[in-house]
Image (tube, rainbow, N blue to C red; front, side, top):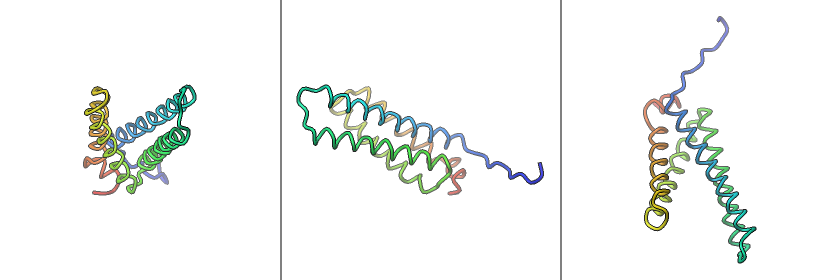
Length: 131
């Protein structure tokens, strides 16, 4: 065992927070595919609006994936953007509580709160070297 570097212990809370960020990224990728199908199969489509919305959602999927990957690699600078993503998710969940499917709004609110808590708890902070 001489000459080997000891593996730094990873916090389970950080690992689960990163996994939930990957789930959010996958959800945005599915939404992107749905928007593409919707634009291709709809009778009346405003091309500019459909393209802009689809590109924005695809970009969001990529950004959330990049944040999850960076946070998974222990980059402390990714924690702020990860929390901002959760704030956007909270806003979306609150909006859905008001106008849309309430069950989906509740699900998004729970997902955002759980992910933010997992990213911000002390074991995750220590794993990132913030403590």
